[in-house]
Image 1 (cartoon, helix red, strand yellow):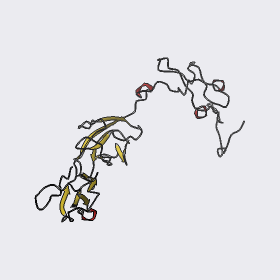
Image 2 (cartoon, rainbow, N blue to C red):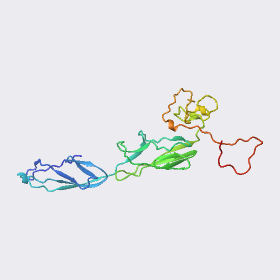
Image 3 (cartoon, helix red, strand yellow):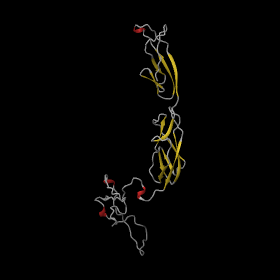
Length: 257
């Protein structure tokens, strides 16, 4: 805001056209910009002092003016909790048991809609269903939990009105097409989609999986970007028993051959 005061001649009331100098007792509350503007920086109180040193020392006719002070009080700004897209209603969610922890798509904004950058706090009505870990929510079990979102404010912002939404956690479906966006996966019993039992020949040298099958039927093409991270084929030792066989004594610590 423009400070607008001016220096006038005490004899005739005319503008002296001398520059006024401003200072603030607390630049964290009100700062001086471009010499003549007061800029609000944060909540609190500051005293603004206007002074004019005169021009006698440069051959002028004006002595220094008596300084004038003005107290300025700045209240805290309001904030509100909205979705990342700016919606005022927080939508309810559905998650599968075992889904990865996730941060809710919410934020705090000021009266102009600008992000305040303040950290939101979450609480769960049932941590056996949804647990809170910092800014992340983690599905823990089947059921429904109410999530309350709050922001307590700081030196510049009042506390936001808390908002809540529910998360329903369901059992994860055993079917591969129940995961949204999944277009390819490895069938552990038929890695190359040939409908036959697996053998070492179905794997590349070094035991890496050589063929990935598109089981969705959508003709997706596999891409193997990290061969070192592919599943490996290994054979473990074991004993086969039929109905007439049995084992006495302690179990062996290892098998070979």
